[in-house]
Length: 322
Ligand SMILES: Nc1nc2c(ncn2[C@@H]2O[C@H](COP(=O)(O)OP(=O)(O)O)[C@@H](O)[C@H]2O)c(=O)[nH]1
Ligand SMILES: [Mg+2]
Image 1 (cartoon, rainbow, N blue to C red):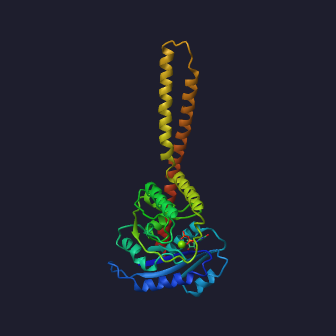
Image 2: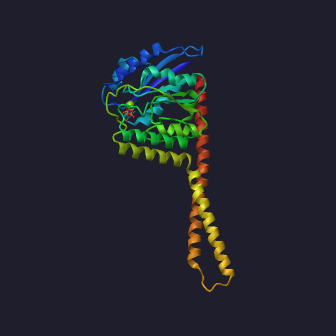
């Protein structure tokens, strides 16, 4: 069994050595899994157009694979490049971790175990948010709130949605396609949950931070970008569900008003009640627009799922050829 540990990096020359050495030490000491299969570990580094010496350091560290973007494309894209390459080189399970040695490498077995035992497709390492010594009260609050929103949307029980320490089965990796440009963390969970994959959380430990977060520049910036991500994700995966309810309410309201107008008209009322007719018509046409949007989103959803299935199938065939 091939387990690939992928590390997306952007200008990580000062942290990458420790991260890789810790991973290597952890791999040597991992406890034996219940499965009898022999596990080969490989490290794959994605250099996302770093302008420092990250690429040369990755080569010097002699990791198994280094892939490089000519320019900085962002974490979400780098994550996707990593997964595509891990699949191409034959990964059965992909572990993703940060280059800043934020996550305790000795916990790799905790996120691997449920996948090896076929108890999950994706395992997200949950940081001890409430007792995290470096998180401010507001950061804890927003992390929990964000995770709650993702749990509801994805219909999973993920505790720490923005965690980058995760293990992904080959099948799940070939199903997931990230459209967001900021981060892969939230969208991948929502897509996996709605796609019927089993996503679980296990508690993991973190190291003392070696530098400030590059993704979370401030609470406000983080909330703003996460909100955009969530809205975009809802529009992609759940648009028809969102538009359908107001559509039904508006149709019902307009029919009630039309019916009332007909009753008044039949009773030979001296007034024409034109305003009622106008309101009912506005409601009716708005509902019709929403119905069109719902129908289109539904059809788009079918097309997206078909395309995802074709891509997944293509990946499988490529693997069979290797
Ligand atoms: N590919 C890519 N990776 C990035 C970028 N910014 C940060 N990273 C990497 O993403 C990971 C997470 O970044 P980090 O600053 O630790 O964010 P945090 O863990 O969410 O606080 C690290 O491995 C970084 O090297 C970027 O623009 N592109
Ligand atoms: Mg980090």
